[in-house]
Image 1 (cartoon, one colour):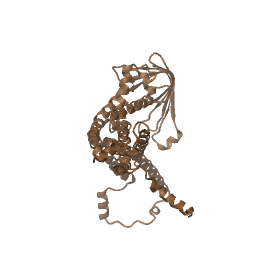
Image 2: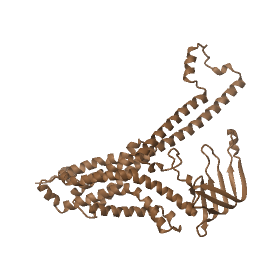
Image 3: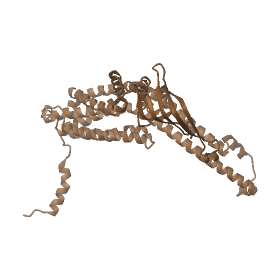
Image 4: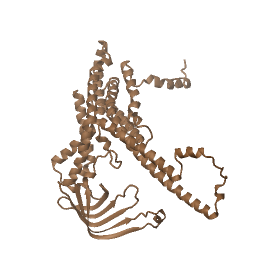
Length: 467
C-alpha cells in the first residue's frame, strides 16, 4: 500500500508537470493570481488519473513482488506451501476495490472536472479577455480566427496588427477577412459578451452567387472602416450540445447513462438523415416511389425503342443532354456533401462510443497491469527503482501506444469502436496469462536453452568434436 501510494504520487506529479507544459501559453505572463492557477490545475488533474493509475499499479506490483523474490521470501512461502496465487489473493481484493473506485471516478468525477475545466477557461477569458487571444498565432474564438501581432496595456487589452478570418456557415463557401491597424478588447464579468473594437481597417468578402455558372467569376466585396465593433458570445465557445459536431470533446463530459441517451439520439438522427437523403436522391433523378412503380407495372405500355433519343429532334436532344449533364453534376455534389456529413456524424458517434468503453477499460486495465506486474516481479527478482522502472515503462508505453492507435483507427471507421477501445487490453492479456503461468511454475522470463539449442546443433555439425 505504501509503495503504491508513493509511486502514484510521484507519477501524478510528473504528469501534472506535463499538463503545465501543455497549457503554459495560457498561464505564463497572463497576470493570473495563485488561486486561479490552482483552480486551473485542479480541474485538469482528474483527466490524468486514467494514465497514472494503471502505470502505478504496474510499477508498484513489480517492485513489491520483485523485493519479495530478491530477498528469497517467495522461496520461504513456497516451502511453507503458499503458492503465488495465494500470495496475490489479498492484493487482488485490493485491486478489485481500487477498480470499482476507478470506475466511479471515471464515470462521475472526470466528466464533472472536464465541464468545470472548459467553463473555467471561458470565465478566465471573461475576467481577462486578453487570455482569449495569444500573440503571433491564430486563435479560435467563437465564429472567428483572430491573430494579433502585439498586445499591450495593463490587462493586455490593446491590440496591434489584427487579422481576422470569419468562419463561413455550413454549406456556404464565402470567406471574409478583416484587417485592422489596432483595436481593443472590452468585457465585463456580468456579461458573456466579449467586444472587439477595431480601428482603421478594411475587410474583404468573397461572394458566392446562387447560380453555379457565375461562381467562376469569383466576385468579392471590399470596404474600409475607421471603427468597427465585433461582439463575440463566449458562452457559445464551450456550450455543451451533444448533437453539434462542431463542439469537440463533449463526450468526455458525459457519464455512462448520459452517453447511452446521447448515442441513441445520434443514431436515430443519422438514420433519419440517411432516409431523407435517399428520398431526395430519388426525387432528383425522377425515380418513382414504390407505390407508383407497382401501378406502372400494372399498366401495359408499348415497348420503347432501343435509342430513345431518336424520338426527338436535334435541338431537343441537345437540351435533354444538357439537362442530364446538369443533373448528374448536381447529384454528384449532393452525394459528396452528404457522404462527408454522414462520415462526420459517424465519427461523432464513434467518439461517444469510445468514451463509453473507456469507462470500463480503466477497470480492466487495473487488473491487467497487476497480473502483468506481480508475476513479472517474481520472475525478474529485482526490486527498487532500477530494472522495474524499465519494464514498467516499456509495457505501459506499449499499452498506451496500442490504445491510442486503436482509438484513432476506430474514429476513422477503420475498426469498430469496441475493438479500438479494447485493442490494447486484448493484445496484452495473453502476456499476463503467460507471465502468471511462468511465475507459478518457477520458469524464468526467457528460457535461454530453448533459444540456444538450434544454434548449438548447427555448431556441432560444423565443428564436430574430435576424439
